[in-house]
Amino acid sequence: MNVLDTVALFGAAALAAPVGLLGVEFLVGGRTAAGVGFLAVAAGLVVGVLYRPDPVDVVGGRALDWLQSDGDDADPESE
Image 1: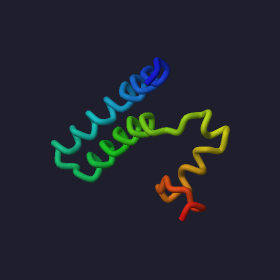
Image 2: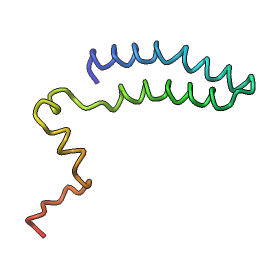
Image 3: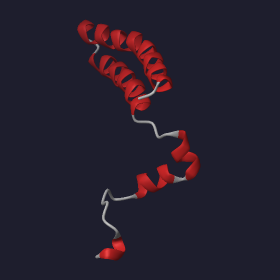
C-alpha cells in the first residue's frame, strides 16, 4: 500500500465515519432498516476504496480479464 492508497483510505474513512455513526444512532433508536442501510453505505465506501482495481490494470484491460476469469490459475491449454 503506497502513500496515495493510504490517503484515499483515510479520506474514505473520514467520509464513512459520520454515515456509520448515523447508522448506529438509527439502530439504537429503533429504526433498523435505516440504520442497516447507512451502515452498509459506510462499509461500501471503505471496502470500495480497499478493493478498487488499479488504474493501470483498467487501462491495460487486465481488470476486465480478472473479473471474467473463473479464478483458476491453470492454463487451459495444458489440460
